[in-house]
Image 1 (cartoon, one colour):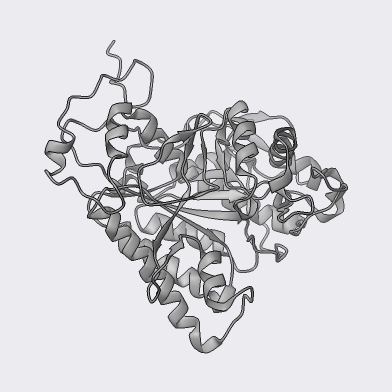
Image 2 (tube, rainbow, N blue to C red):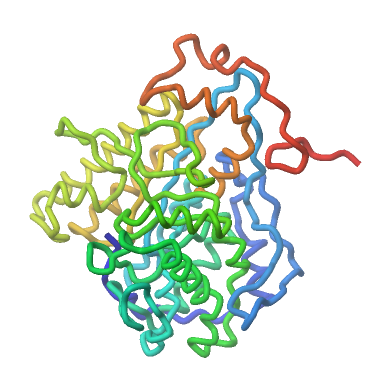
Length: 421
């Protein structure tokens, strides 16, 4: 499912550590105007830069533009959350990472970027990777080069400072029955997760790029969720992730209903939405639309590219409208930075972002922000929301449906009233 092309050489970015961090943190022009919520996040501290380990990452304070979640008031209609997420995020010659960062910012939203750890590891150091059930240096996707890592680091840095989330898509992307992630044990997953973190935390050592600015976050704390390769191995991954303090998983398939917890994690799976021209529904991911349209060929009939992209766009919009007018269940969409079928799916996703993220009561958010909001809610309110079926709006209206007064939030949890001094 992940794009298999190796990350290409991009432009070198030079920046001094403190100057880069301070400049990026305070230069997010327009972010404070966002209607979706990120404008409520605190700006990044200007002077706190504490390097971690070899300086590949750094503590710079709370993430800027991360909104404080609030509990729904009695009778209040829930906002319509939409999550756009990207598997195997890295910046290559297509420059899709930088492009969709801008798309998110221009349309009042944030996104989640699931980084492949091997995109932070140069080809000549591939033997540092010890994939579970495979020999050292083995991978189903490419490693990177020095300039490709520099480009990816730049995009990760800017993405986080703009309020986006950096998750993980792990490393070698092994699918199927020959040592694929579906056969991995809990301990295998723990090893894979530890290595994904380590490649992010040591990119300077592995590349020799010691003068580059660090990533402005502690990845041990920032990493709270993931999507498994090919949506396989979810059961044991969730057990491992729960023990390691993750907060959500998005490796499954679900209907458009309100999420619940499994293994202590929010199950924020992608969903089935209408598939125009078909009687069955389709998963909210570019790969799945492509397989239904051109099979395993990533470059099918050029005469159909426009139609296929429109089909995906319209299916996602139908799913959005069904939730927006119905149960308001969060819509979860997954993608890859790819050029399949002439790039038609990238065009489709951009048009969906433009059409939905600027609507009233819509919040285009990262998984991190959605998990924060869910944690802030009264469990009884969420349980009631889960009684609504796909596309079902409360018959008596939202004011009556959620009229019960929720229990007060405990002090110190997201959504609790600020402590007065």
